[in-house]
Length: 191
Image 1: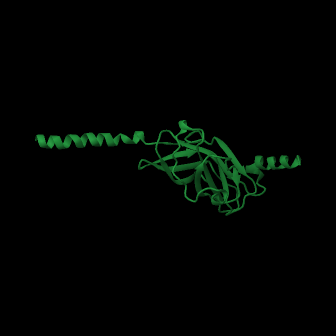
Image 2 (image 1 turned 135 degrees about the vertical axis):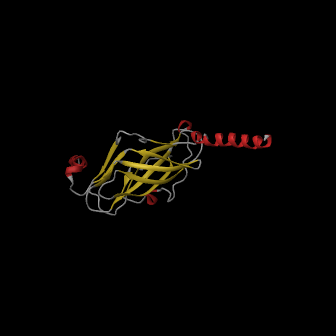
Image 3 (image 1 turned 120 degrees about the vertical axis):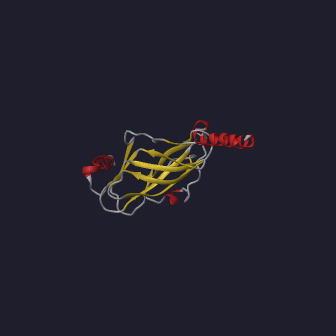
């Protein structure tokens, strides 16, 4: 009986320690992420057409503690009218951030395969830039209320939401995208 107790007790201790390890794996922090009250910002791109890439960037990412996380998937939250996230990538934030462009991320200097995020938030102000490549498959205005980022951390799958509404506005859609077209009109008046 004592031999059995000596074998079982270490197994119980190891199991208890391993089950609590998830609290110590790093979590991904994304600027504008993890809110539950709807989008924090809205990006409207005017005159978008089907199947063209629209790349957006400029979101800071970092970890809440030392370690490494790998982003494995990015999916739109509450998408409508066939908006898709074609690609995602990241790069060290060492210079100007992307903003937006009508090119694939790989043509804008982002790696085809997003590297692991290893920068700890409190250790430096130079974090990692997240970039997303959107498209729409139809002619109508398409959008989503944000994206859900799935990542692995210490072998566990986790998610964080980036609450930024993106609208890919159809040419001339002033009903949904009036603000974007108003901005276009006012910028042309100054020239």
